[in-house]
Image (cartoon, rainbow, N blue to C red; front, side, top):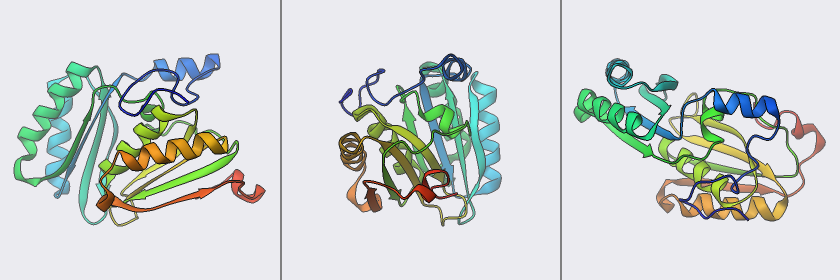
Length: 210
């Protein structure tokens, strides 16, 4: 098992191993992530503009989510993301409904949220479905830090009523440990459901959900 939830470092999750994976990971800024969710689409765009003008951060996601809200996900250095988050919060004011600052996000999160190619199913599969975007990212970060698993997919709000979900894969014991850590990282009221498939059918291995 890797580092415990809340600690960063290569032991949690498989992480990049090939030269191509290492190059892809290095191309994304880090190690911090920031998320702002607003109840207004128009104000969300203003927040995103303020954030990237304030500090040299990279927008990983910037789009409307159901039902009529907006989410911004940024990555960069710790100080830069923190500064950009303050600018976004100042612009969003009372229209911000949720926020998250992860100063030491697990290395799998940024490539996944940026839409990089996801790994294939390699064993057991875990699914965590949450009521909010922020809860999904928190659960994924904790899961990846807790055990040697691969995060496969993380969907934030779009077309699913503002909820979020993530899928992860690995050896059964690792998936169980990662799932336990992910669930422990979020408030019980924010969990919709979690599921574990010890041995998924071959037809699911290439296309688990989408």
